[in-house]
Structure formats: C-alpha cells, structure tokens
Image 1 (cartoon, rainbow, N blue to C red):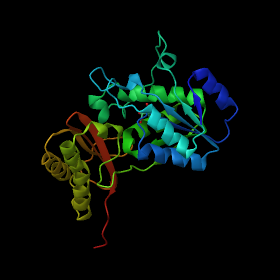
Image 2: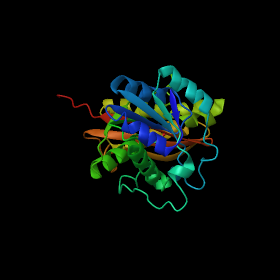
Image 3: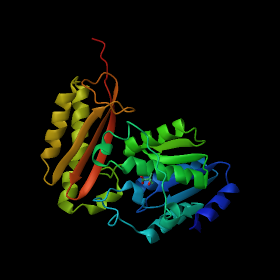
Amino acid sequence: MKIIQSIQEMTEWSRHHSVGLGLVPTMGFLHEAHLALVKKSLKECQSTVVSIFTNPAQFGPKEDLDSYPKDLENDQKKLEALKTDVLFLPPPEEVYPSGYKTYIKVKDISERLCGITRPVFFEGVATVVLKLFNIVRPEFAFFGEKDWQQLEVIRTMVRDLNLDVTIKTVPLIREPDGLAMSSRNSYLSGEERRSALGLYKSLNVAKDLLDQGETSVPVLREKIRDVIAQNPFTNIEYISICDPHTFEECDQIFQKALIALAVKVGKARLIDNVIVERISCKD
Ligand code: PAF
C-alpha cells in the first residue's frame, strides 16, 4: 500500500490512475463499517484511495476534535490487509493553509436534525469532501448510510455543483448486539454501552408499532422517547420522523420515512436511524 502525505503527490498519482478510481473518505479509527466501504470500493473499482483526515472544520468549538479517537498504526494494518492501493494522509496545514476562506453550504437540509445543535458540521463536511474530490478526482466515492443526513448533503452538493463523481453507499452496520458502529462508541463505559442499546431497541419498537398500524408520528415519537429514557446516562438531543430527503417532519407516516435519533450517552454523542415504510393492508 502506498502512503501519500502531500496534496501534490496525491493529485499526481490520481492523474495516472483516474479510470475507475474509488475514494473512501474517513476520519480514521477504522472499524468494520469503514472496512465495508473499503471492501466495496476494492471490489467495484480499479483502484482505491482511503483518506484519513480528522477534519477540524466539522467540529464546533466545544466538540471532541482534540479527543477524537486515533490509531493510525492499526488503521494502516487493516488497510494493508485488504490490499488498499493508497492511504492518503493530507496534512491539516495543506488542507486549510493560513488565510483559508472558502466553505460550502448546502442550504436547508444542513440546518435540520444534526445541523440544529452542530451548526458548522455539514459546512465542514461538504467543504472537506469537495476538496478531497478535487484532489483525488475519484470516479466513485463511498459513504455509509449511518450518516444518512451527511449522505444527503453530499449527494445534493454533487448534484448542484455538477460534480463528476458517483456516490455509492453501504447500509448502516451494527455490532452483534445492535449498537450502530461508530468510532465514538470507544467513549462508552461498560454501563453506558448497555444503555446505548436503547437507541436500536427504540427504533425496533417504533417499527413494530408501525407494522401494527400505528402511523401517528407524535405517538411513535413518544414511544421512542420512553424506550430511550428508561436507560441511565441518556440525554436525547432529537428524535425525528421525517422525509428521508428534505428532513421535513411528518405528522403521519403515509409512505417512506426516516426515523433518526441523536442521543448523548455519557459523553458520547450517538446517532442512529432506520428507514420505515407503511405496510398497506388490503382490508
Ligand atoms: O463520515 C466521516 O467520517 C466524515 O464526516 C467525512 C465524510 C470523512 C468527512 O470528514
């Protein structure tokens, strides 16, 4: 595996490998959900670049930029074992040199759900992803559906700015007990981790209620709240039942809807989601 640590070298390498090139952007501390993206790219693309960059622009001043988990040695081993072509480690001072001024804003959808409490998050994500697309020039880029809103922001940016890249996705991946995989799960103590299972449980309870015919969003939302609140250390940031593309809140579930959660468990801010669909009955 080639390791590239400068933007210029990355651009030069990409110029000679542009056909069928896949990019997997990450912030490192790689787990199975990241590796699923890498495996998909390796299978579907001629060559694969994985970037590791803890992007300061997507962290607010009181967020966990300084404590964000890192283990580059282990990440490198995992990527080497998969036979990744390139690991790209752009230096922060090259990505955001002094005097850096340009940020990408995807209106409306960035301001809902996670955008309410993390007002700079999606601007930071869109900016770094566009920069990575311009540096690496991939034909395909891979993102996980766990970050559903992030995925919609990136898809919208690609569409609106006529970017010549195809976005590919991998479904949300869970631990065997149901906890959605996330680098931030490493912040959880044993007790907190048990409480965190309430997120998945609450989504399943809501899905079951919907399958039994309950389509009222206030009722479903209250049920989700009850299930999560039964677990200690949990602090609900939002429970949203909304359109999966515009993120406008629904009153009733008539068709497809996104149920998305953000919950603090101890100091870990966790998100989870599921797409639900009303099953229509004949009688
Ligand atoms: O999902 C992530 O890990 C990050 O938000 C991303 C897409 C790598 C941008 O920094």
